[in-house]
Image (cartoon, rainbow, N blue to C red; front, side):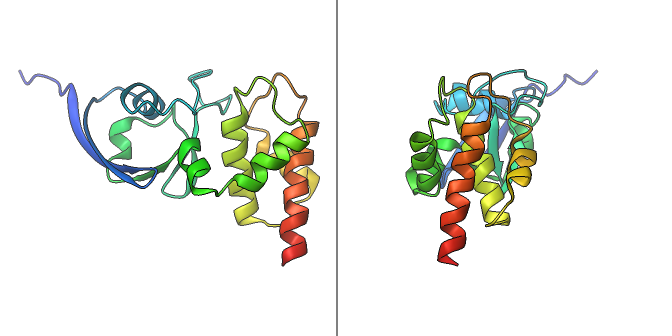
Length: 163
C-alpha cells in the first residue's frame, strides 16, 4: 500500500518576495502565512470562511486564507496586509479609517482594508450600499460598520474627485 503524501514543496511569491517551503498538505494558507512566515496581520477567526478575518489577496483576487490550502497557493502571488501596507497601496484607506475611528480592536481591520481596496480598484465610485455589500463578508464586532463605510466612502470621494 502506498503511504499518503504528508508534505509538499511549494514555491510562491508573498508580498513580492519568492518563498519556497515544504508544508503539510493539510495546512491552510493563513496558518502557513502566520506560523511559517510570521505574517500575523491576517487573522484566524471562524475557520469556515464566514468571518473574513483571514482575507488575503491571491493572484489579485480577495480570498479567504482559511479555505485555501497552502499547497493550492503553489505558484501563486500572495499579498497580505503587511505587503499592502509596505507598498503604500492602502495608505489612503488607513488614514481614513483612523480619521473616522473605523477601527477599534483591530481584529477585522486588515481584512476590511484589503476588501475595501479591492472594491475601490474595481469601482472607484461605489455607493454606500455597494460598500456595505462588499464588506458584508467581513464581520466586525466593535464599530457597527458605519464608521468603516464612512471611511471607504471618504476615500472613494477623493478618488472620484481626482478622476
